Amino acid sequence: MIEELVTAGLTLGSVGAVYVAAAARVVKQYERGVVLRLGKLRSEVRGPGFTMIVPFVDRLQKVNMQIVTMPVPGQEGITRDNVTVRVDAVVYFKVVSAADAVIRVEDYRFAVAQMAQTSLRSIIGKSDLDDLLSNREKLNQGLELMIDSPAVEWGVTIDRVEIKDVSLPETMKRSMARQAEADRERRARIINADAELQASKKLAEAAKEMADTPSALQLRLLQTVVAVAAEKNSTLVLPFPVELLRFLERAQQPAPPSQEQQPSLPSPELFSQLQKLLSQPQQQLARAKEPPAESTAESSPAPSYESASEPKRSAPSMAEQSLREQLPPVPEPFDPDSGGSKSGQV
Image 1: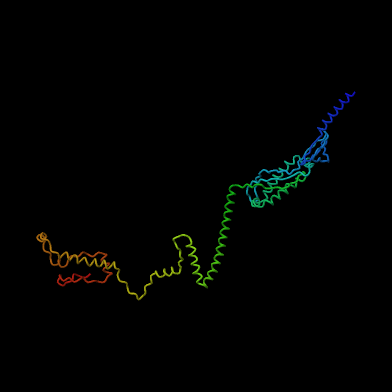
Image 2 (image 1 turned 90 degrees about the vertical axis):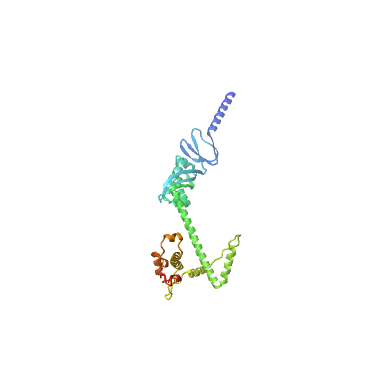
């Protein structure tokens, strides 16, 4: 009898241990347990810690209550200003109602991911390229509202949405680079022009002050010379007044001829050519006066008086005629050997 009781006790103990092992569940701190008894939702959501369910009757489903970081794959779209872009984003969400997350939607993670992708495409089509690049805070808020509206019914709340990257085509990148370069150059030119304007105003004021006191200009000149000669160099730069250069230029210009001015004399070149022309008859006359050689005297006849006294002259050239027309007539030099007669006039 005692043995039967012991056996029955052991049997009941083993059955109880099996039952406890089958019914015991542990829910972690960041989880919540949703119990379905014979397919029907139990109103009580099991909290963290040790809990028991009815084996083969209840089914406990754990739901993670932590904030989930979900990357949204890059979505290609056309912006409102007809630019093709590719945008990546990140969604941060968490479950606030474990029962709704299990009952109202099959897979809340997949549902949130699909909603994030469609919302991202929609926000790309409604925005300009400049908004995607510079005004991301406003786009993040719009994305959060678009995803959070249907997710509330699923027991999920969207913590925040961030646009991670915006990929542009290479042609658009080059165009934006040229635009930025042109804008920078425009700003630089405006700043330079503004500086020149301010400098010109200050220089005008300084010129007025120096006009009242000429010694100030001389002192400024000396200061400039000292500044130039401060370094170790062998060249000293001195400013030269422009008025003096203009005066020298006017002095070098020829004065206009007056009405009472007499005609200018012939140039020295004309006189030298004239002397050459006058010396030719004299050379011929000297050669004619030389006594002939003995061999030549016997064979050749005696020269006539005309050849001795007046040598034969060649016809004047065009250059000689032009020179003679330009110069006044000059008499031939007197030859005492020719019997007091002149050889001719030019």
